[in-house]
Length: 336
Image (cartoon, rainbow, N blue to C red):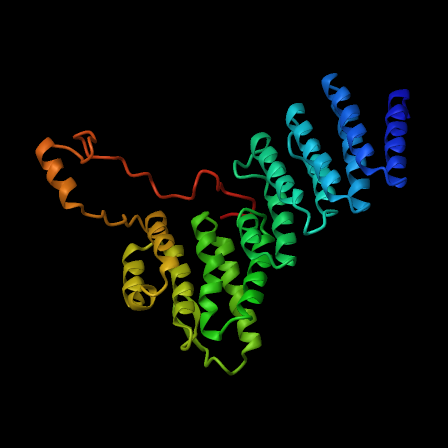
């Protein structure tokens, strides 16, 4: 070990000794001071090594606030050093993440900071898929479905399995006829990110679990054609809609989608949460434009001034943004 490396190890050992003595606040503050000195000298390796090791020791000692503070400072040092996400840089962050207590408030901030760093310096504008996968998996284990969904939808090819399992376990607390609502949370959201493969995987995993749990109770019918095989659930029609929607998406046939939507229109009308996602999916995959809401007063003003209402240019009114997966949701790892 070099003299410099030996010096850093001694600094870390001294700070960890403070923690062993129960001087948690002192250890945290001294770590910040020492790390700042090395950061100012652009000695990134030394600053990172100190922050990483002392943060772990504090988290292991149950000092989530102090440890979390140093974890956030570690990510900030990554940003200052302009480090890119790789197995080493991500590995440090994930090692620390797994040491947090689930109730520690700074953990959510830390997750947000590491995603932000990977977004700025990595190749995925919405954040690194592996970081999303690990964060989402932790939330799923802790039965925090809303937080889990945000991350798993932008995760790796393994995230679909975790998400489908979580949605199914959540569904089991509800009535059997609500199955499609839980499956749809994953399937429609994955379609909105452009990940047809993951959406299909979620449908397959969810329905397989349902078939296994409800053997003989659902009256499932297997229907085969020359182009596809599908299972029909007579008692859960909206689950059939989701399966047929996935087939329609793969064929990219607008007429097929319109027929499907019309067939289930009365049931779909009752699920308010699906209205906007389905409109976006119709435009993304079938080029079916969302109907423009008519405003008689604005139409009259447009007629007077020869253009779009509200002072919009005569060439066609306010430009409607294209409905695609949001720019913060790029093609993540394992997409079609």
